[in-house]
Image (cartoon, rainbow, N blue to C red; front, side):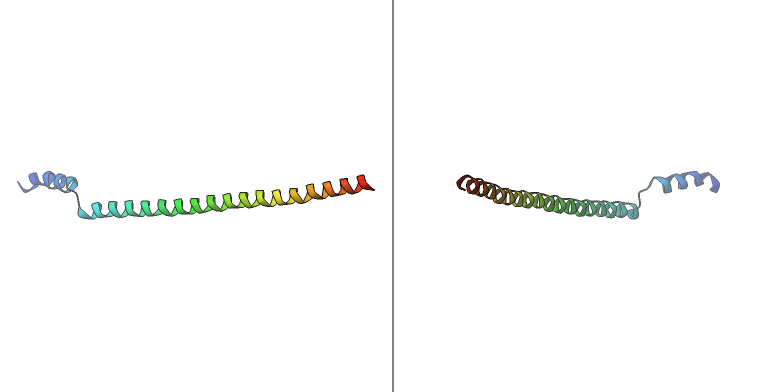
Length: 82
């Protein structure tokens, strides 16, 4: 008769939820959320730095073209009046 209760005990042990499993799932979810936040912060920082680099490049390009165009106008006028 003792052996007849064995399958019920095994079944009860398999179907009950343990508190360890619940806590580990919450901990893993927290780790996943934290990792995503870190990745998003890194990606945002890289995008902002990239955009600043592009803006600085355009500003420098505009300054260089202004100088070149002024020099071209100056040399053209100098050749015209010589």
